Length: 262
Picture (cartoon, helix red, strand yellow):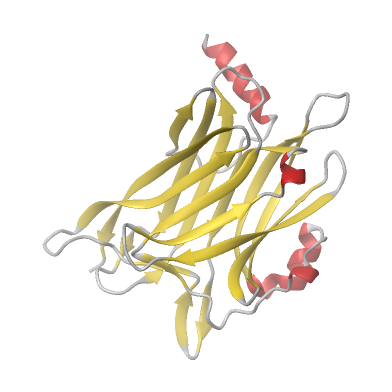
């Protein structure tokens, strides 16, 4: 049974299991036959109690099914970050969409490296008429951008199989003043794309340290929400939601721990 399960998992992701530690502490959520392994980490985990310090935050998802059949098409990805973390894009160069769509990974970096705020990987099965789905995987780059005057993250992906293909998705940023989560990042796949490419895995690490007006900033920064008298706490890092076409939405809250600095 274990061998059969392993073979089905390998076929489902089509050699697209990410070669990183993104899923080292993954949490599995399942509805009907759809299954997503959702993972997330921060670095460092020792942070100030008051104020914030620059961090990197990694979020990933591996999409599969309980019976090994092809998974439903991913329609929308939403990541809500704990309110003790924040995004800071003041002073960062903005990447114009026209410079990275279309573009190879190398050309996108050459055009907008100064706006780079994160990197990751993606994997998908591409539907080809009268053929079995074709595996495709590649690099994901995240650039600081603006859309309709509002800050966004431009997620640029480029795959070479079965043919060279470039796609840039705006990941829209929303903030909330209250509640557990303060910043939400949402990406919606175009319907025409989601009917062709079936995402099987995605990972993204947001990290960028920079100087602005003589001060050190982090694109992502956070503090440790440990109450006074406690030096370590378990807290909800993020809530990730994967919405599929013609399938249930799968969501999970990732709880992680941090230690108070000093």
